[in-house]
Every structure is written in C-alpha cells, then in structure tokens.
Amino acid sequence: MSSTNKWQTSTIYNNGVETTDSTVRKSERALLDRDYTLQCLEARAMSVQGWPANTYIEQLWTQRYNVSGHYAMHYDWASDSKTARRASTFNVYVQAPQRGGGTHFPRLEHPGQDSMWCEFIECDAADAGTNGVVFKPRAGSAVFWQNFDEEGRGFKETIHAGLPVLEGSKIGLNIWSWYQKT
Image 1 (tube, rainbow, N blue to C red):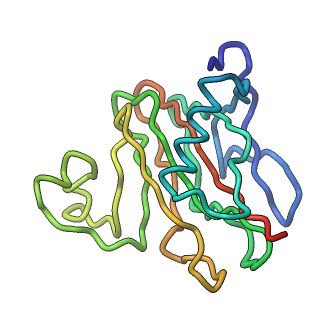
Image 2 (image 1 turned 90 degrees about the vertical axis):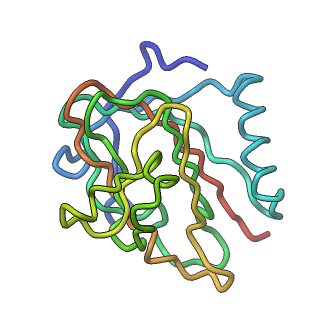
C-alpha cells in the first residue's frame, strides 16, 4: 500500500468538470494499488457502517499536503440524489504535520473544553474566534461522517476545509462509500 512515485496534482470538480486550482486545493494525490491490505481496509470500512445495501468503497487515494497545502471549504457530496451519491467519509490521518493542517467543520457545534475532546480537536480554536470544530491531524486517527440523511438530503454540517499545513507534511487517506440504487 505505497504511494511512492505515484504523486500527482490533486484535482477538484467544478460543475462536473475535473480541473486543478491551487487557490482551492493545493495538494498531491496518489492512487493506491488494490492489494490484500487495501481490500481488508475496504471491508473494515463497510463493516463499521453495517454493510449497507447498494454501497461500495470508491477507489482509495492518499493525499499529501506540504507546507501551505490546503483544501478550501467543500462538501464531499456534489448533489442531493436519492439514487447515486457519496454516502459517507472516513478521513484518516496517516502522517501528521508538525504544525497546522487540521480539518475545520465550521457548522459543527464545539463540545467545549472537555479534556477528553481536547486530545482530538483544537479546544483553543473556540477561544480564538474560530466557529465550529477543528480536528487535529493525529497520525492513526480518523474522522467519520455520513453525508446524507435518510431522505437523501445532504447534511449541511459536513462542509469542511483542510487548513494550511504550517510545518512538515500531512498525508491522509479518504475512504468514501458510494451508494448506487439498483
């Protein structure tokens, strides 16, 4: 499960067109070979979700954010569709930068200064005037969310951004579940 020598500029989609724009997303990505380890990871991601019907795991890519690397506010879903959609996201932190690179969800309610949460989120962010929650990019940890409610409407609270890396580099793995009604 290696990304070595596979890195390419990350893309974005704008009105269904794939393009690059470093003002929106400045990172590199690498497609992973679907070996036995990756197949086990895919099965685990499906198991955690209860093996939902008509759902599969999209191809897995790693993302690398070097100094100043970021991803502006975005949703992981493109449209409210009852028949085909990116159902959920696992945002896995593989390598953490020395500084910066958190994942910011401005519409999530901050849980406060509970020390249990402060291991995983920036508790000082609320004091600094940042709305919502910033998850720390801790290697080996992950953030999971559903992108849609039971009626197929996208959760507006899932808008998020990859904050700029200030020192070092961040490597992440997104595990996206795709729902396709048959």
